[in-house]
Length: 484
Image (cartoon, rainbow, N blue to C red):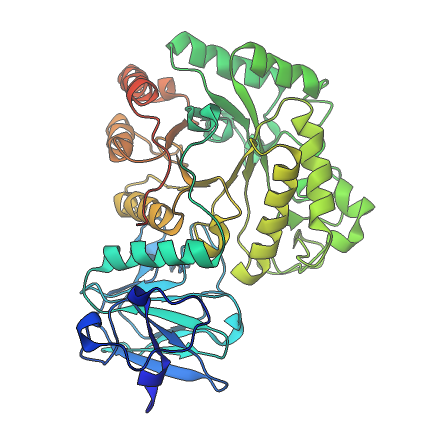
């Protein structure tokens, strides 16, 4: 870029977004790098696509990239790249955890996109050696800091982005948001005797027995979330449940009675809902066929498979109807799942889901699994999501990276320390349970128990209780403070 100095705007000078690029700032206020960029500066695209090139040292941290090869399954390595790549962080699939559109190299050099406008041509390309090339189209801006203070630059980026995106970090939250959470998901998997049997195990009695065990353990009371399986499967297939957010009367003859039971036992009801997916045979697709979007949500793709929700449909009305129905029954927490499509499609869906909930009651807790600065305004809590604790995988690195990406990409929002003991019941041992739980101690976020620990050992029952009570009495610090 021969005239790249003309595209610099010094972040430290306090210029408003859209201000004319600064070309005459005093040198004393600008820390120039070897590439000619100011520390904490912004590059703005012209009417042609500008290409910015920066010398970097691999491996590169790419927190938006949650795609992984089979060899990386269950690890956090997919967030680091040493080989050549070409990524558009706005159109990449969200995956399990997909953070902000930034890159940081081993020496702490930091770059990040600052607007979703012109996202189609906003790309990061690495040559696999030492050059990172960034396309900056008209309307896009790029934050650059080559000082080597990567986390400090990321915090500064977050602070500026909160102003640009017009949202404030939470300073406080409704008390129940910080409560310990209990979730049926892994317990369902533990009790299942047949393949996919866990989807059809949830009943009123299952929930009652689960809560009675928590009470018998003497654990602190908190949120109680019913996971996948509380709803109807209209044609008998699991897939037809996507979009059928209606209780199955065979398993829950009186859903209001179940919600009342949860409340009466001292817990706050929560529901898992996979809003981003919908099946043609589902109850809502039958009523609102315009909700059906791209069917390529499974491999191999099939028009008969579940689809992604159409992001151009009236999602606000759809979400309002579903959320209000269960809010009236006492549900105050919604766990939104299956946001695995492209970020460009997921963002408008998240916006409308969140807006619908907050129009009903601002205190409803809306939890998602996409910790991206552009999504943060439209979430209350981000969960660290799906840790498969199995000796075949480096699950410790996955735990570490899912937490870091969530914390650093969602400033001012709550963190859910998802599933003590992980999401895989096949090989969990006492040592694994205790090691995983220890990784969450003293971290920002609230603990979540899903598998009842007596399946592992009495020591796990006792140690988990000590951890939960210590959090409940002395911690309850759930909000990410990763900003200036």
